[in-house]
Image 1 (cartoon, rainbow over the protein chains, first blue to last red):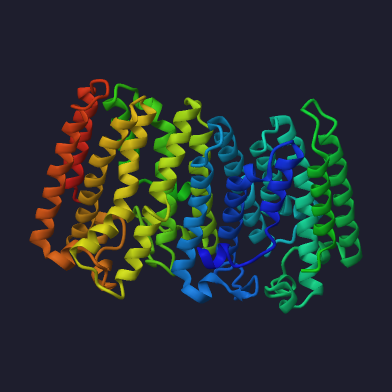
Image 2: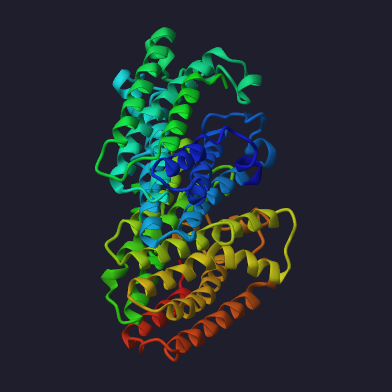
Length: 266
Length: 266
């Protein structure tokens, strides 16, 4: 569990949760339990995704994957344990009970069959039946968008934001999730394994449905920019709603994270 | 997910939760969300446990296991999805928020690294380093006892019982969990696969640490009876505490379930 969850990574989801807490006028510290839980759910999904029966990856975050290092059985169980621990971490925090419960609910929906896991199943099916552009977007909204959206929404709730703010910022997160995944697909085509800290070029080898595979590299880049623009618009909208005024530092941080996700090279 | 969770089984954990709700003066109906969640967690653990990299089982509840029927990748994801859905089911029920939160917390602790998954890791380690009697009990308390204990405790909370009642009935559940697992070990030695609906004799073949392997058949049977007697005592104690008086029908049901678990033949 430690090897996987403390072994580096970009910490995008915790960063989004903490920036989002600030954006609604709270403190980044308030978002620590949800930030930890989000990273644990993300990491459990990576551990299981790297298993031989799934993507069969040996390298993750520049380290041997959990099953390479500790064996497959321990990898399955380490993922399962992190999955449970995520809910434990939120439910056992000292935030107000109603807020903890709302975070548990939203995290479960985002991670479950209608969210992340559902997207992974669609992704598996896409290996034998190539999806169209709409199908591909549905895959990405599930397997990546749902949890990135939940990161922003849970951060907003943890920072004391209203449900309206969590929903609107969650919409921003949905678009941001698509940006993240399209860029991920592009990097898998364009970068080396050493730079990414994980095996590059695997999507093409596996015949995976990706944005570059379906749209071509140029159009995929344009799609990433288009979704980033939509994300920025939704971020502005979150400041114009019925909730309390947003904190401009927090919004600025979310905008910086958007730029960083769009222009990242690893 | 449906194949696994709706494909039969004894439904011991839901039955315990519903009987426990009645025992504290509630209605069995109140325990349905936690009963469903407990069965989903149990089933997810069976799906993952049956994987080739774990126990490599082909037969479960008289049906092909999920990975045999749908492939390994779908089996990993179906287990993951049921795991998340369990928390979703409790958090999204219409019970009082504080109670839902308490159930999420207790379920997470019971299923996580200090409970079920921790027990499974100890069980794996026992394949290469035979545990003594105490070590074996620790394995069983984790991998089986924790969730059976949580079944009784969550049922009590869902039925409107106090924390004291949930804890005391949970103690009953811990002993009952040991009874369940010892009998499971005995049945694996003594029964046929057809009768059990799962592969028999696998523990011995795998060199697993079991009660019969460590204590012998007779002593294992005596251990099961001893823990059943302790369970019955704790059940009596739950009626004598500071909580509201217990419902005798519910306690009777829990006693019947104890007898059934001790004397089951499949």
